[in-house]
Amino acid sequence: MYGILKEIESRFSCYTRPSFGALKPALRRLEYGGFISSKKVISEGGKLSVYYSPEKSAEKELRRLITEKLSDNPLQFISNAKIKMSLAGLLDKNERAELFLHLKTLALTFKQSAESILNDEYTEKDFYQKILLDNSVVEYSNLIAVIEGFEKDNERNS
Image 1: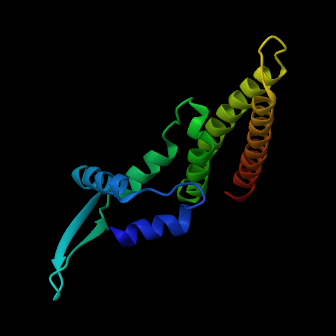
Image 2: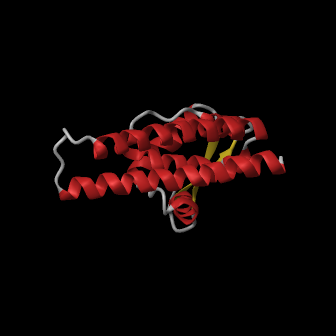
């Protein structure tokens, strides 16, 4: 499990850092679902090691998870969107187009919501709230620009 955790961190540490407590149940769910298999081996020193291998159904499940719609809760949206986009190369052209459209639609919605609150003169906001709302608008704008770049690349190179 340590090796899996380190691999996730090496590829996705700027987006997520799962704990052992989160990884172990996830691996159990994947194994129970038939997407991975495990093999337990005891070393000469008596240490138990568990090795995981993907099953044939794993790629289909990964594609399903990548294309699964995100919730409309903005709290973790940017991180989850970046993880999905970083795996877009595993999808075909149409799946990528759908993913990018979904993410851009949500990002535009969240940006518009932040702008609306920021510009609403009847909603009382202190200095810190204004700065954070402004930052959210910039983050969503940047993400939308990245998604639009991916959309153009997807149209050109697929």
